[in-house]
Length: 86
Picture 1 (spheres, rainbow, N blue to C red):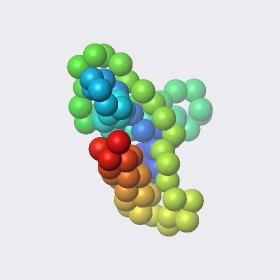
Picture 2: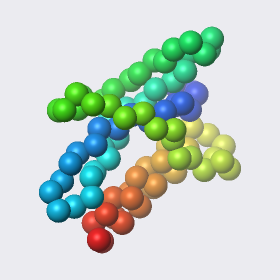
Picture 3: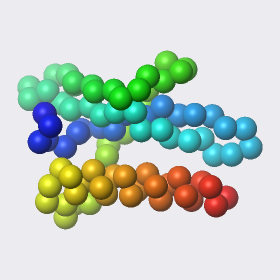
Picture 4: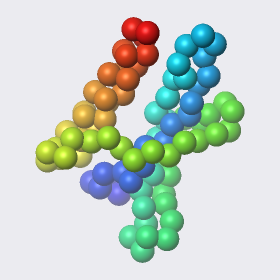
């Protein structure tokens, strides 16, 4: 599972008064080989109990899982900065 890119990223959405919602990445999900379920690895639990699964936004040219993770982190940073600039 570690060498395979996740099928989904897991987020909790933090509501912020007067600001855009903040999507906090809390883990990832990998599809089972038979396609009939997922393994979900969480690094944190949401306070409100809601988890949102979204496909990862990765660079299609990324050769390694590490490069894909760097791309995902960069995209998350870009989103965070765009919200902060509003």
